[in-house]
Length: 140
Image 1 (cartoon, rainbow, N blue to C red):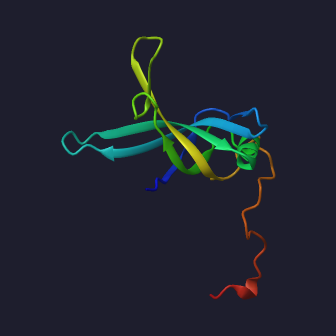
Image 2 (tube, rainbow, N blue to C red):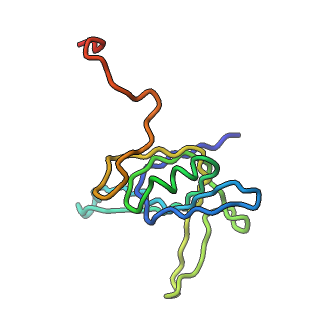
């Protein structure tokens, strides 16, 4: 069996990096995925946001920590990690007494989307194969 989840969303906080006992870096961040639709019965716009807790390991963890910031858009591929007790999302009680939950994702690929925002680093890592295009090689 195989599980592959692809998410596109915005970071809800700045990434936090730490090191495992074996020295391997791990970066965690929250990612909000949203959708908007028009309710058929009422005609009102509806919004739904799902929060994901993302963990990234190894060299990608270091790149995420360096280049991602709160609000930045990212595409994340990985597998969902269920809560060992419930087999579903992690569930907890907030300070105000209401129930909360989060979905956890162990990422194996993170792509940085969107352009630079004001105040961000000027040099993001280049995409593979990126470079100048010769005008004569364009077929139209």
